Length: 530
Image (cartoon, rainbow, N blue to C red; front, side):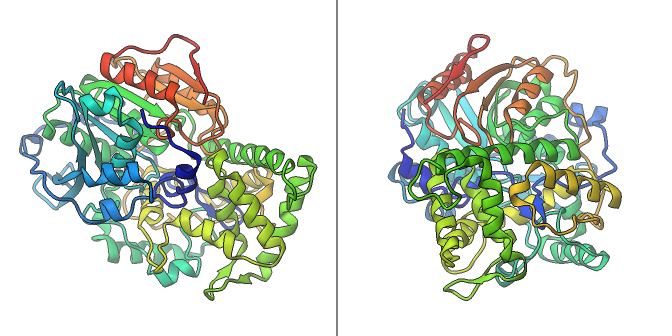
């Protein structure tokens, strides 16, 4: 199988493919990727059964042909991934916008496929890289490159679909212009919001994204229904799936709603189904601080380290570099400003993988010298900004999807949580008062996920959960919890990375292949490392 080299990992400064493929987003005062809605709904019997009257969708034929050029052009400059993307063919899947109105508006779901290379084809494995909001049409090529030369790529078509609102799917979420993104337009519910700006963001997103009905139907439960239609349209009686980060949530919700349609699920970089919005945010913030502390230990061994030689003092040292940006941003060569938030974004993007730590050290050394461009470049990768100033819609879609999934926190809950997050992740505490308004306060519709979810599922085949010990944004505790909740087998991986299945770790690839192909799970207590 194809191993990912350090050069390939260092190419991941966007969703192309790594940093934008991950969940966390920074916002004013602290980390804030998952702070969103309220009024959570529990799954109904119709949710679990899938509902009636869907035959016209379930029985549609997917017509595969040439892909949008961005399937290739958006990939990192890695020959194996480019080669896989060039082999892809693409199709459009039609699904109802509102599953309670099957005759109403439709959503056109973009689908990509890299066909099985061998003659002994078992079916399709659907993949999702997370976000929520990250394109799976491009991620399919990444996973095909990881699995090239092994039995998964030989025996399965590798299929990615851009969830509703994401990427090449139409309509897609569009809230801001590139200029507004350059100026730091907020993309987290945990930002500096007023009653006017919360209304404005809902209006702007509705105007650019297909209307309020579209915004109200972007949640994970609707995406799980879409995935079941895709499963049927692909000709698979049951779903074979591998999802990373938010992709683990999507797979978990699918398991809850359609347990009898599951063949095999690999849930990687697990989102904990027992944690509500506040609990998970604190869990994530602690994980990010722990990742920064591990980076500080690495940095202390470098000569020089902009944070000094004592890791215990690293948080204070980085605060010394970042705090001046709160009131006096630095001007980059292209005329844009590096603010406290954008600098924090740059640091966070490098915490996703140990192989990216040298990039953080370089960015901080440049900042120490008064040069902001290196950290701003890291931030640009995280936000999916191209060299021409265009942005992918991944983080806008993240915001929108979470506005449907997550709890709408009250002003007191927001303020209390903000203080706790700053305590949990002090290295990115701006020192300003935490937000008291939720950016999703005026979002159309209600929360549709519900917390906790996926408990006491009956009839679910055994699932494989993979979890990295040093995962910064979906900490290992969440993987343990998900495995226990689903009665799944846990594969623990001794690496400092967010997610493991996309990293080309031989031991992980072999265990995943045994499971996906033969439905053979690793032994209890199994561990992997590089």
